[in-house]
Image 1 (cartoon, helix red, strand yellow):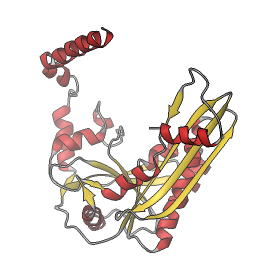
Image 2: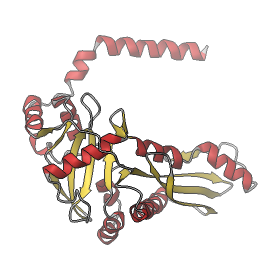
Image 3: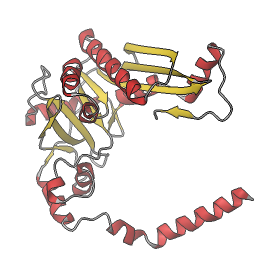
Image 4: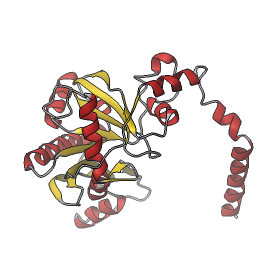
Length: 293
């Protein structure tokens, strides 16, 4: 009976969405929506990327924890994986202790990420190292001194996000949505946005929006200004070269190495269950799990 009631309510929600679709979508449009879209178009550089043969590496991290009988069991992992699914660097940790804050685990995961990114560069096996997610959002959680050290550790890596709430480019125009939304609406062409310099706690970062193939999703790319990377000055030719490298092993417009990195480092609830079993521990009745996914 309960399942039937839920189904009925959900059907009502669907009917409401169909009936009021246009009105609700209209709320997303800013008063100067067309002006922002025109501005996004003017900043877009068309480039039909030509795949350049290379080996790329994706870097990602994951953590998970569970409260067990008054203390926490946690696990953290970070990996660097090539686009041919070869793990070239890895870091991990698991332990049992008192109350462990999520911020502590995130900080430790970020440190592991930077270590495997360094090892990937040092291996000489890859031409480009991609880190999943935003560098700037990572730095916001750090003190200025820690942020500077974090930037140094990540070195020549580039950071790639599939989603973003950043309004650094169109916020001054009164945008409601993130910048990535307007670039997606402005064009379906393959190409990239004119690099915008953003000042972060760890130094200057170039922010670029990029579509590796026509019709595919827009990605947000961040580069550390002043690194020794061949893309560090974010010139138009450097960005074109980057796109050609990323295009080689991309799937559905997204670097395949990052998909592999996520798959190889994800720590699920089942993984925590297995750890708890190894330690001979059981969940307290009614205990709640915390998963960083």
